[in-house]
Amino acid sequence: MPDETKKSQPHIGTLNESSLHAALKLHYECEGDASEAPVNGYVVDLLRLEKSGPHIIEIQTTSFASMKKKLNALLATHTIKIVYPVPIETTLLKPGKTPRKSPKKGNIYSIFSELVSITDHLKHPNLSFDVVLVSINKLQEFEKNLRRNRGGYRTINTELVSIHEIHHFCGLHDLMSLLPEDLPEKFTTADIAQKGKVPRNIAQQMAYCFRKTELIAEIMQSRSGKVYERVS
Image (cartoon, rainbow, N blue to C red; front, side):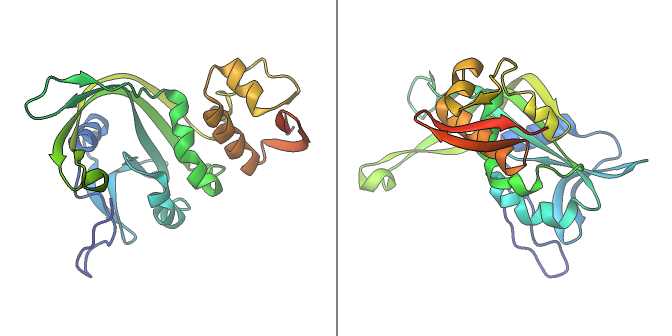
């Protein structure tokens, strides 16, 4: 989340945290880590000094697109792990109302909806990802100006309830492991969706990421859509 500071301080950071962001940062923080550390004009969530070099951990609960400038500036000199929480269970808490479960459920493939915005960085050897499957509470309040003045609820805070699983992806080839193993030699996004049991839009995002990073190539058009094959 962008945050302007004085000229003597870094100009970009995540100083206005949600409870979810703060809880995950606490979960990842180790003794000796610097929190909200200034690095080359940016504020990073956690800076860890290791024998192999400086390591940054970024808890990213918002769009990956907002990280582009930070990645451009820091990837060459730091290893960076992006921690991406994906809610697999969300409870909506509204004043005076009974808590209810949201029908929206993410999964490990949800990260591709964000990776599409940083495909230029996915091949960088200093970049890795943790996909954290979580249960959360969303605290909401009514605001009459939402939804064309008809009123609606907006989220004012997101709380971490529990962590279910953490999936580590050391790089692009680890992410490729999410493609179904039994894909035919030539395949479409319909094949990815069917064999991977994922929605078609997620399959399209996966294909976009892997095509932009030259791990698969578009070879032709068919009535079923674009046809791809893996690049040796």
